[in-house]
Image 1 (cartoon, rainbow, N blue to C red):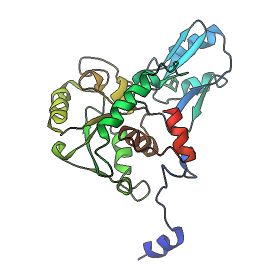
Image 2 (image 1 turned 45 degrees about the horizontal axis):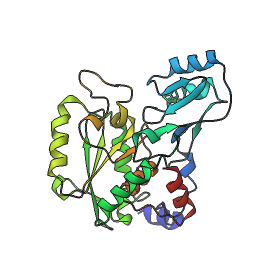
Image 3 (image 1 turned 90 degrees about the vertical axis):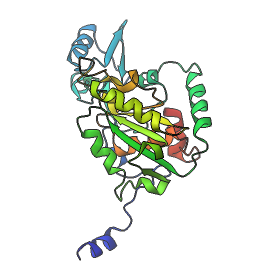
Image 4 (image 1 turned 180 degrees about the vertical axis):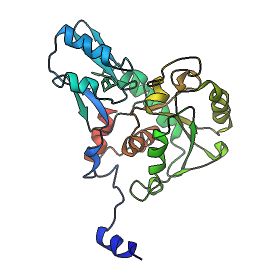
Length: 268
Ligand code: SF4
């Protein structure tokens, strides 16, 4: 029984997230940020051309980056490190697709309105929330991270969140994948079978924008054209911490009185 001394030696490994940060949290490569550094027009146009998902846009020498399309390949970070940098901040989910673009557009109050509506919708769920996951044409990477949520480290059950195989028992629909043509109808039917109130979360850049596959004869370039999305979790794949943040954002369970909670509320 080697696991008994190992367990005694290592103690409790379960994350305290979202109440306390974990030491290893910053080890995840969660997103790319744009810094204040400068780059010439030529350098910027090379970076735009090198981005495999066209996530970078330049208008009048001002660069912006769409995290909903960024697959974290690191090409722009390598080319222009003074401008693009990897960030370990995991709180990147948002209720609005437009808010995945950095630098963030000015807050016109629409985010607060959308959040308020969602919070109102989910207030009956409390601490018994059931998730149904549907793969709508994923490469499998997001599934690994979703599966990790149930292991002893992330232990999503400690938050009153459980996975269910039946859409009839589900409150939250987690969707991964590019939105393949063959999955459009099953996705709609799954959502239809769920009782109200229901929440839909697009997990990963494939589900948000189609990722590397984009839009084509077999892909709708994300699942947003098939069903309405309430929360977007970027990442390629999204880490378990990013997933936890997005799920807690969706069900309005992010604490606001902890340092990390306060930060999450500002950043998401
Ligand atoms: S890290 Fe993201 S933004 Fe940069 S080149 Fe890769 S996909 Fe494009």
